[in-house]
Amino acid sequence: MLYREFGKTGLQVSAIGLGTWNIGNQWGYIDETTAIETVQTAVEQGINLIDTAESYGIPAGLSEERLGKALAGIRDKVHLVTKIGRWGRRSGQMVPMTTVDMVRLCVHASLYRLRTDYVDVMLCHEGKLSDLKMAETYLAGFETLKEQGLIRTYGISTDKLDVLKLFNMNGTCSVVETDYSLLNRGADDEFFPYCQEHGIAVLARGPLHKGLLSGKYSSDTVFTDTVRSEWYGSDRAKEKLARKLTKVENLKAALTPGEEMVTAALRFVISHSVQPVAISGAKSPEQATMNAKAGDVLLSEEERKQLVKCTKQQKTEQVLA
Image (tube, rainbow, N blue to C red; front, side, top):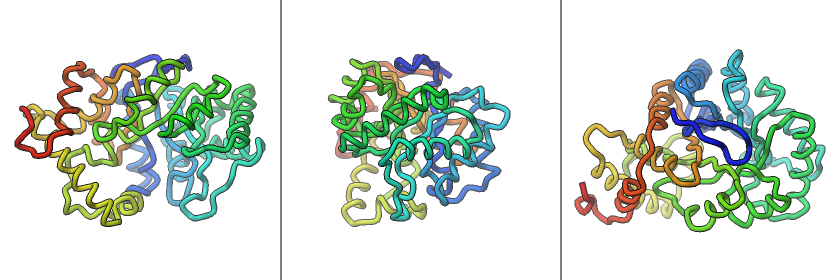
């Protein structure tokens, strides 16, 4: 596993991180024993950054609870990232962060579920944050908690540059989590350059693009989990899905024999010059092991360009071997 400096946080982190949204049963059922074994296997394979959120799970908080159990006795081997700000969103009972006390309450609740007395990175989960007062509330709450030693550093999860700039109004945002993959490279244009300019560490969520870059899905796939069935439920979404799957087939055709699609997709992300950590989910110890192995090698810039070229082709037969 390759390790890297994590922006200005002072943390040394693995190039591949573990995402734990799916151990909370929103991406299909996973029993608790398997969830715990998956987390522990990831750590054994060299992954030392694990991402979760208060809202992950059915019920909400289940991901944090299971993660806390999995890390019993090995908490000091990992850097924990969690998020607050979307509690109750899926049930239509979202809790607004209107006061510093509410921010502090939610952080304390996360610490309780995670069975720890601190988290390494706390993120605001309001990706479309635009209200100045609410941003100031989060920042004030996070600063207080940092002074108390309950969080080591903080940031925001967002795909929008204007939101990141708002949250970095005081120059104190150390980490951002944003969507980035071979099928979604929008952050290349302005988002990543801003992060590099300001020393903001990047967590790349969705490096397998909701699992599509695993290469195991087709246009006939019926998603039964609560997340993807919602994302791909409409006719318009299904059309977009079909176009993306064509790109995936192009990518698969361009791989060398024996090369795993997952490995290529993850290495594409971690090889970016901004040095992001690829946050990839896993629902089994085997998946965690495969993800971790991708963190052993970086791609050259030319290799990255060739993969990008594949996503721009219209037909599989046009892809260069």
